[in-house]
Image 1 (tube, rainbow, N blue to C red):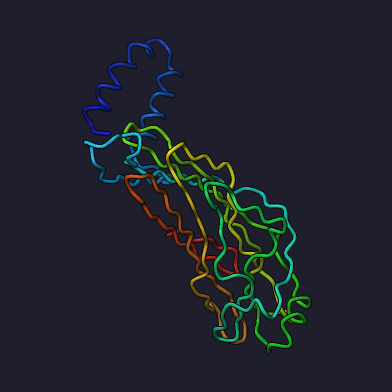
Image 2: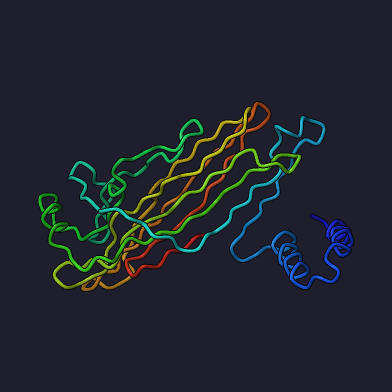
Length: 251
């Protein structure tokens, strides 16, 4: 929104807020949230055909980061057949790519613990033994983000919330900090008539942030989502990096 539009809005609401300090404070807070780019909100403005039907033209994408949420699930091991990649004596097991939303509906995984785990690699025949011998896992950590697509009328036509969850700090024989149950799940998916929406997540790479003697596992993954109307298809992606010390970095 332009500075002039913001000024007009202020003038229109000033009369309503006179004599009410709390209302003035609330209006000021809303203006800060709407007219400035807050630290927990990202707004992507898109070019669109202003001569086309504005209902089917996506004009902006908003991504809001929520406070850390609680996650309740139990991590379960993946098998040898689920090996994704091996780097520097660290192995990632699970699924390299997994769907989050298909045809506008969240993909329900009855076992959310079956995510990506990044653990020590001691040989193909030792994966199960290593996993079960690990200890000092943290409680599940989770962070949620809401993505909203708005059309040329500034009405929300697609909205969904996804949650990144994982456990960290796992040790093997008293050393290292590893990862388990890295997963992304979606909820509160809403897709307006005339639009299609899909989303998936993909593990890109794993790394060691520590030493050879005391490894700190890292994993980078992308969340990809595609919004489509009969006028246009828009693809977006967000990358995350999680670490065995509990850090979650979005970029």
